[in-house]
Length: 262
Image (cartoon, rainbow, N blue to C red; front, side):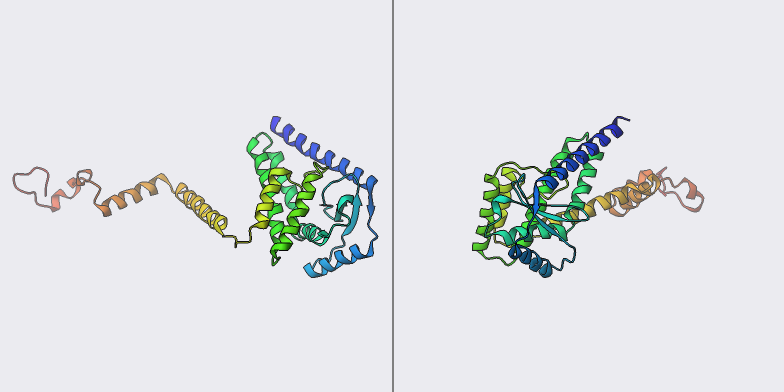
C-alpha cells in the first residue's frame, strides 16, 4: 500500500505540474506568423521527412526552446532568440526530438521513476538520461557541420545558460539541462573526433554476461553436479578414491598383497 501510494503521488505530482505548465503556455504564448520562420520550419521538416503538422509559437514565460505535445507537437521559442542566427539549429534540434519520439521516452522514464520512487538512484538515472538525450540530439544536428558552425551552436547554448533557470516539466524536451549538463554538451559539441562504439560493445558484453549467468543459474543442482564431476574427471582433478569398485569385484582380479587395488 505504501509503494502504491508513493507511485501514485509521483504520477499525480508530475501530471498536475505538466497541466499547470500547459495552461501557462496557452495563456502567454502566441503563434508565430513570420513567413520566413515558417518557411524555414517547413523546409527542415521536408528535409528530415517529417509529415506531422508542427506548430511554431513564441512564449514569454520560457527562457529556452522546447518541444511539447504528444499528439499535437508545438515548438516553443523564447522571445530572446527570435532573431538569432542560430535559429535553424534550434529548430532542427527540436525536430530531431520529434522524429525520435523523445517525449514518449521521457514518459517511460517518468513511469520508471514513479515505480521506483523510493530508490534515489533512479532520479540520478533520469537526470543522466536527459543529458545524454540532448547530447545525442546535438550530435545528430551537427552531422557534417564545420568547426565554425559547431562554435556558433555552442554560443547558442551559452546564451541559453545566461538566461538562467526556466519553466519546464518532465514531459517536455530539455534544451537547458543545468550548467554542468551544458558544460558536458559544449565539450561534446566541440569534440570533432569520431566517437567510438565503446559503450555499445560494453552493453553487448554486459548482456552476454547476464545471459550466461542466467543460463548457468537455470541448471538444476543435479546437472551442475554431473558437469562438475565430468570436468574434474577430464582434467584429472578427481581422486580415484571417490569411486568404489566393489560392484565389479566379481569380474575383476585383485592385486596380490593389496586389499584395495584390482
